[in-house]
Length: 444
Ligand code: HEM
Image (cartoon, rainbow, N blue to C red; front, side, top):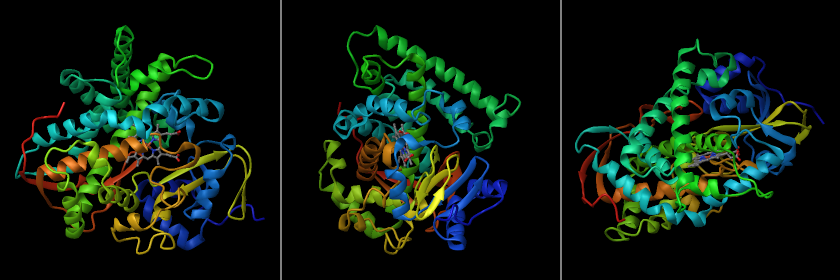
């Protein structure tokens, strides 16, 4: 068996190219070297695949043989206790404890908050003026996380947290995420990020303290996590809780906002998609129970197709602690195996005419867990996938049923890097032409 496939040699150039244009770079390397191919990166050597069989092999690999990629870099901004960084038994235990609050069954408890917050943000969008949908999506998804995950219900307590989170995320600069030496107070982006993070952490600790004194348990995810116990009866420590909350915020807020912006873009770009989506939503009648949006077939397919054609995280890697056979190659321990979400989602053997936005493909075909992977897969499959899809459908349902929109962007809006995510360049520019209904801020 050959040891490693052909691929890139310069770690610096490879990392720079992936930073600038991951989708184009992966396509280019696949065309040049085949699949899988080798990527020499500043964060270590990687054997990368976008082939469904290769992706399935990675998802099926024994979790005990896989560690998270580039751990040292990430621990300083995620927090050492983050689930994204744990592995082996600790990761298994963390997932067991954290999964129940994110299960599909729990989601109905958050539907009213999601709809009310979307309506509230929508009512503050000026009519007739261009807006940036990514910013609007951020406002919606951040508020939803602060209320449903962190338990901040009063607007007065949400506002300062929003400011801190925005400050922290806006300063989460790719430079220090890819080079640990820049995690240094002399590097201004890191200094700004650290200052915001310090204040944000102290707010979270205050919140945990307050919750401890409350007699009735809230519906929010923090309250559920505080009450949950590991198999040995112990609970998450304060440090672990703050690191996990930080992770949920970083992993869940920006990703969902980007997906919302892209979904509005694709719906408004395609008149036939718009007509079908709108007619399905309108059939629910005025002021439906928000859970009804989440059960709409076409809207669900629109959300999936959006995540397929514009993956927000374009590749994920795992560090091998034992050699692994991948598509006929033997990858040694200490190397990483990676799956390219974009290569797989644009693979014409899996998706016919992959460059076309066609939600119907999700109504016609049930894709396998290693064919449709916007949320990754295997033992690290995104913990918030049900939450994200639920929120996206409710937010889109409210946005499309309550207002008329015009898209200002052209048909070929490119993806650009924002920290670890890829987002629409310029953020999707829209105009709210009119608000068709002015509902009260919420049903509840
Ligand atoms: C459209 C929105 C989202 C996308 C595209 C997305 C995508 C991803 C991806 C690709 C991974 C890595 C999976 C892997 O390594 O195989 C991941 C992990 C994760 N995501 Fe999401 N995510 C989204 C929303 C959310 C939300 C809303 C939350 C929580 C509020 C969340 C929490 C997490 C967590 C905790 C992990 C780490 C899981 C682990 O390592 O065990 N995500 N997500």
